[in-house]
Amino acid sequence: MEKVIDIRHLNKSFGNHEVLRDVNFSVAKGEVVCLIGSSGSGKSTLLRCINLLETPTGGEIIYNGENILDKNHDIRKHRTHLGMVFQSFNLFNNHNVLKNCVVGQQKVLKRSKQEAESNALKYLEIVGMDKYVSAKPSQLSGGQKQRVAIARALAMDPDVMLFDEPTSALDPEMVGEVLKVMRRLAEEGNTMLIVTHEMEFAKEVADRIVFMDKGVIVEEGPPSQVLVNPQHDRTKEFLKRTL
Ligand code: ADP
Ligand code: MG
Image (cartoon, rainbow, N blue to C red; front, side):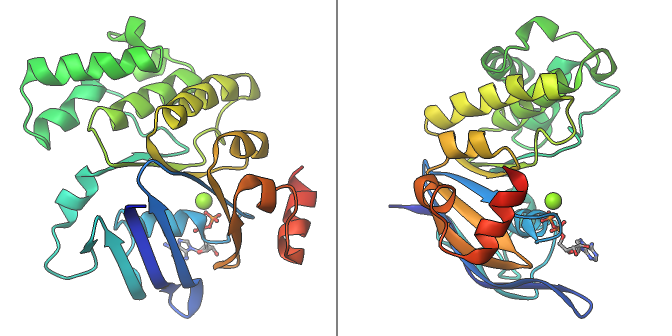
């Protein structure tokens, strides 16, 4: 299968603290990969290396066949191919919902206002937020904000959606509405790399589960293997604590 992200021997240290150690893994086109592991295991750092918010200390990240760590690689252009959804929403609080989903398309992709708005509306409808185009983020619940953040990322027509614990900051009653949207995106064939603690969700939607511990990929495979019949003691320990 065609690899969108191919990571080889990736290392990342902060000072003498090794946060990622010889990480090897890939994401194929249309694949949904859930990355799980305890807090501090390096999941966010791995995502941040993929969109070059962090510079790896060693190894390679091949993105659609190109080595993005090559010093001649255009970082800004690279980031336009990735949709990023964070725990903390990161909406523009001074803009309404529609504008939040339009500015990136206009500024970065140079789309006309009309084109950007119709594209934004298409995705706001998918996430069920098309009735709120004029609302400001401060008027929305956490679940609604996160759904707008997902629509905003999708409106850039990314190759891959990266999610970093998208439901961790939400009140429990709002987790379901965000997972529902993500489930739909997974079913529609979007390529997704998701850091999550929602094990039931991961079991349902993931083609592959990657378990990280202390900067190392300990185990990976289909949910039926990693979540149901884990091979490593560290995976068993982690699942015992989370389930
Ligand atoms: P996770 O997302 O799995 O909880 P992180 O990738 O956020 O883990 O962090 C992994 C380790 O790297 C932690 O020990 C964290 O303290 C450290 N770390 C992350 N970012 C930085 C940074 N900018 N400077 C120093 N240490 C960092
Ligand atoms: Mg994290």
